[in-house]
Image (cartoon, rainbow, N blue to C red; front, side):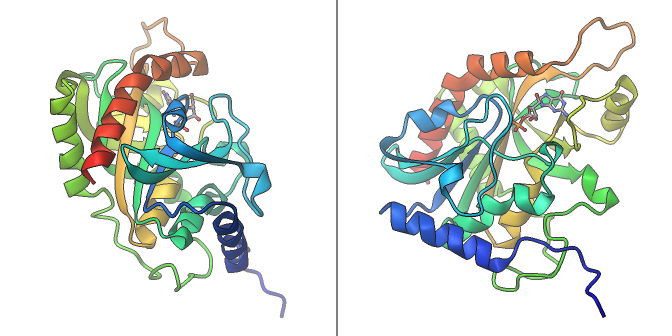
Length: 286
Ligand SMILES: O=P(O)(O)O[C@@H]1C[C@H](O)[C@@H](CO)O1
Ligand SMILES: Nc1nc2[nH]cnc2c(=O)[nH]1
């Protein structure tokens, strides 16, 4: 009988990508950073860089979104070896959740055990302001309500268990360490801690959808992060999630504001220096 199961990414593809990378750099980082929309400048600050375009790596997807350069950058951040993804993948580009999270399993094969995931997000919580930095304490996988999950398909036991727990997805110790860094850097007035909700995109939310998310207790909404976090936790990585509030979600029919990607990139640029300082300080303490 023909197999009716959807195919997920074959194990061999992760292995071939990892082997290729290991053959092209001597760097062996334990920390990976996924840079959100417009936040890739962090990678420019690494020392002793090895830059690998995604298209050179076997089986790696390509970045198609403005503000996502499409390169892996290996190097030293505050003396610690790191690998930065300058550009991530999204399901709205046409990728499956497992393809979006492909790099995370490759990182795991490289020896990465700590994943810092950043994103640009719309603020739902009315106490937030544009430019706030939100540490993610939990997420809602909205596409997951319709069966979209990066772990869908046969389980790869070599990476993790069939039914991984997600109640501890975001590492409390890392979050507290990051909070301490914001105090040291004088950023405490722009720091929040909250719940991130992933929607599929690429359209931004309607006013009714924003109000629904507010009722659900969501603090910030975006189109990413959740696939990488679920996949990272599946292979027991420690995870820190950071959302930059690049725009406020529109909750009132009286508003004349319109969500747009230019505003997202502008706010990212405005806060790039603060985020770089935060991550540099944090990585130094890890
Ligand atoms: O990759 P992230 O989540 O940072 O980017 C967000 C979601 C969309 O790609 C884009 C919308 O402006 O920003
Ligand atoms: N879904 C969504 N993603 C974003 N990314 C940056 N801002 C937003 C937003 O308002 N909504």
